[in-house]
Image (cartoon, rainbow, N blue to C red):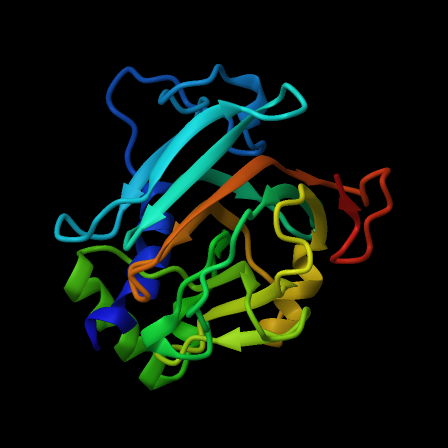
Length: 265
């Protein structure tokens, strides 16, 4: 496994593991069925309840995340990446069969010029929403189980059964599913493409259960965590992006967003 190739897998592993850490003695169990909104926090470096930072490696530069007040007065996350890769995550225990609708807002002022998620040496994105799923690892074929064993040996943590990432791509068409070149258990779904909507706040809504079935050809297990990541460690470029609130819901949101391109402000 090459260093660049391992990066996207370490991302999935660390994101998943961050949601599965044991609670310290005497600590109160948190709510893992909802996502604490960024807009409920105050501007600054302190993250909202339940969110935590995760890093890929102590040898890798970290992306800077900070809560700032947006143009509309709501608090959002600003991400600044400079040849870096790290993220924020929130542990979850969500049944996508009952609450399949995932909605979020993001804004990208400038794309990463040389990024291409179909090429391992250029596998960067200005914005990613990352969803990790549970599942029965014993049902995977020998090669995938062996790969998961190598990942655990490398990281000391279990690899998620499946990871679905929603990304902004430079050239690939909206709706395309890009498979990791290293494992079938990591898929990237292009939810925005090209530069025509740079600098705009976009609201997106996806049916995660349907997307999972299309990407993996099976029904999804429980969702164990969600995360965001802005990364430029492969291209070495600099970019910034903004993330608004992320939420799951049982029914399609009232804005009726069936399209990947629903709202621009």
